[in-house]
Amino acid sequence: MYLVDKDIYTFLNNGSLKETKQTAIYDGDYRCVSSVGYDLRANGFVNGDRLSAEFALEPSSSVIVESSETIHFDELTCGVVNIKNSRLRQGLSLEAPVHQPGHTTKIYFRLTNLSDKVINLYAGEMYAMLLFEQLHDSPEHSYQGTFQGETDYTGLAGYHALYKDQVEAVDKKILDLQE
Image (cartoon, rainbow, N blue to C red; front, side, top):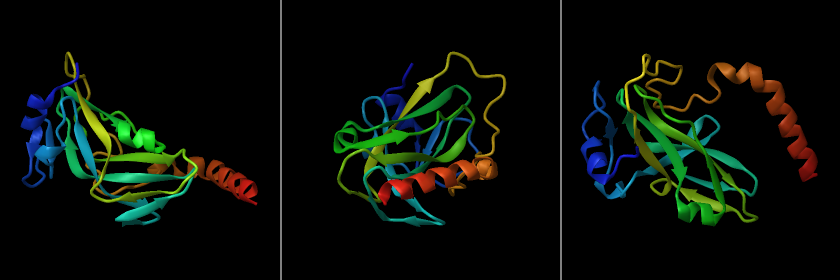
């Protein structure tokens, strides 16, 4: 069951990030709450090893977006990130993981430009909506993975070596296509 605006308002906590047992949205904004979700504000765009406040997204290219908010999911709540309709119509596609119960993190998602035009992205704008889903029971084990407490994008983390050859092959194919 997706939670509604009345529930989401109770998650807003603009104080400092601290241990909590309840679902919380830190550095949130009441104006971002919609009837069934929370519109995430872009804090910036992962550009190499830095976070950029604006980004020119070329056709067929992707960028990782970092949310301004940090979210804590309690034991009975998980999060699903979806693209906003206006951004889908603009030509953007979005990929994001499901956020498991017990996870505390900034929200990171990948935007891909499917249009044939450059799309300029800006910090502060909203590209995605976070939906909160209530679970019927708490899981036996809550999230304790690699990205717990992630407030800076760590990229492929421990998987980098595993995918290095594949990424290089894709990069080469892209260069070949561009030539």
